[in-house]
Structure formats: structure tokens, C-alpha cells
Image (cartoon, rainbow, N blue to C red; front, side, top):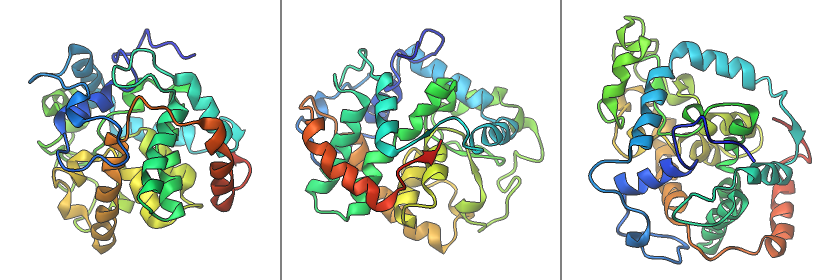
Length: 290
């Protein structure tokens, strides 16, 4: 099991707990066996370890770091394995410190996908729920937490005030670089989100892994599900094109399943495995490069 001793978060899922504090959904909790207010809800301020996580994330997520991470990981030479094997690999990240669930990572993925399936969505949508967090295996490839989780944002242009803990960008070198600190920065208005660099993490990595296998809507759900400044706070509208406006609706449809499907009622992995292995085989080859 991966050691967390050098990481700012007490649990890999503390970031998701903080999302529940910042973005509670009073209306919809698909497939959820517990009331929203029974989730861990912080007071007005997040714990210090969450703030420390974002301090590191905002200071170190630069254009230079982004390009180097892409060069390192998008060569896809870490491991060769199938999707289910990757889920079992991710299972070594099970957190005993998560206050909202005692479930393993694989059980959380199944809870998300089962909630989607229960609502009658297409098979590709169900599969998207299953794989959306698999990019967290970056932790097992040596990436620090601040480069794996956290709300994502665009690097290479001005950081909008809507980004949580915006004040921590003061120490980010890009904030004082005239190439990157204007609204457009290194981009052009209307260029489309496919043509920008999002901060590096499990979303962007898994999007790159899946981009040849899933439909556009599923890929948008994976790539943008942590992009809260965009899909929830309305930032970066000036970078969007028509395709992005269409994809935004799919991302908004997906995110409640990600945030609110946790419960303490574990899915039966052995019973569900045949269904999901068949679903995986419908879209993915038996082995892919990671």
C-alpha cells in the first residue's frame, strides 16, 4: 500500500470530502443510500491539511511542470494491463482514514457506475463511471497528491478568482509571467477546451488513456469532472467553442454521480465483475498501455 507520510492530505479522498463542503447538492443524490447531511461537512474553513494541499497544488502546477508531466506519463510506458487489472492495482490505495466510507477504491468505482446504471443511462455512460477515477494510479507511479487530485484549472492563462484558495497562486511563477498571466495567455479566445492545457492530474491522464475508446461525452466527463471553476462556477467561457457548450451538459449530468454516490453499503464485487468485464470488453482491448 502506498505511503501517505509525505503527502499533505490525511486521506487521498480528503479533497472529495472538501468538495462536498463546497458544492453540496440539495436536490439529487443518485443511487445514494445515505442522506447528504450525513456526509462529512466541514465548518467555514477546511482543515489545514487541505489548505496545505492546495498551497502546493497552486504553487507547483505551472506550464513547465505540465509539459514535463505529459512527457513523462503520456508516453504510456509505466505498465501494460487491462481495465479491470488497473482497478485492482488502484485498490492498493484503499484509505482507512476516509470518514465517509470504508470502501476500497474498486468498490467506490462500482458504486458510481451502479448508480448510473440504475438510472438507465447508456452502457458507455456506465463504463465512464467505472473508469473515471482510475487515473489516480498516478500515485502508484510516483506522482505526489498535489499532481493527482484537486480542482483542475487551465494553466498558461490568468487564474480566475473562482478557483478555490486563489491566494495561493501568488507563489506560482506563471502568475508573474506576462506570457501566461493575461486572460488569453498562451491561447486565443474561442480556441476550445480541447486546445488548452488543464492542470495535471488524474482527470487529464485518464482522458488521454481513454481518448481512443470512449465517445466524446464520456471523455468530457472524465477530463472535466474536477474542472469546478468551469462546470460549476462558470469560468473560462471565453475559451469555449460550440462543442464545449454541448459537452458541458454531459459533465453536469455526470458530476452528481461522482460526488453523491458514496454509501456504506458495499457492492458485491464478485457478482458485478462478469457484467463489467463484458462491458469493458465492448469498448477496450484486453490490454492497454499506462
